[in-house]
Length: 366
Image 1 (cartoon, helix red, strand yellow):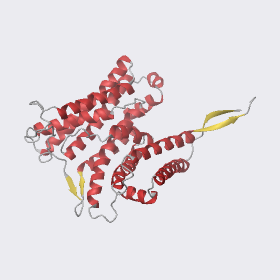
Image 2: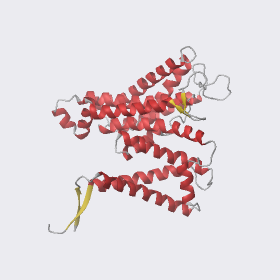
Image 3: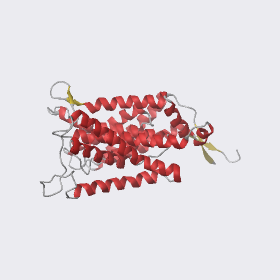
Image 4: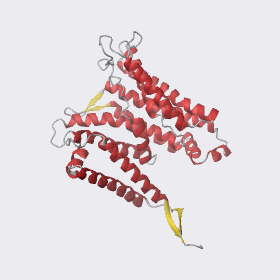
């Protein structure tokens, strides 16, 4: 007796939604078992995690504001990565591209922030960060189309080049290094928030909505339209399905790969400028691992632009909420969210497999 994997007919949307929901619930149940094993009440822990400690907290508005700061770069980075993934260009270099964008944006803020109007400095920061990060991503695309190199390996190695460049900048006190405070005896990054910072909109009471939220939402809509309603988006989907078909249709595949690699990396650079422009200071942990987490988010959302925002919001609740819950439960540190995130990813991918395929038993002799 043998088993064959057979492609399944398309399931209706409600069945797929139920399958994914079961996967998430199963992941939470596994997490609950782990929590019980270490002596933590899972109901209380999950309550703290999913409410992020805001219930009954008079400083809840600060929690939401900090949550949004974590959500924005993850959502935009995930959208950017999905562009490349749709074309089966495996851009694993989100971390490096984010770092290069952050360094570039900070350089502009420090050199032009006190001479140009703030709004103009912010625009230049975004443009330069997009250009530098885009060219960094384009390097991997160029090597792929020119020499046939593996973009997964190239973008991965470029991450470490950018990371060690950031460490070098953050640890080297020298006359040329404008990123560090001159007056400090130890290396400390210059804080430029007093003269360059993305403005916030008063939403009532003490809650303020950073303008980057609106900009990110607009970019999300534009990317959706770009993928679904433009020739470029159609070309990306065709190449993702079959490079041979794209070439047979007369598409300039190398040009499309280079263009998409640049746009994907440039959007990550924009996310970096939003992050560093809101924080007002560069740091060696400026990415908060959004380049890695963005890969998970993009796949959990099935590369759907709208779903990426939903999944990003949920992932950030896990990450941000676990940090809050860790202050109540000393046995569980904030890394529990990373483990739970991994379990969710594994089970959702398993559910996706059974949505797409079914296992058929074949009797001997058939």
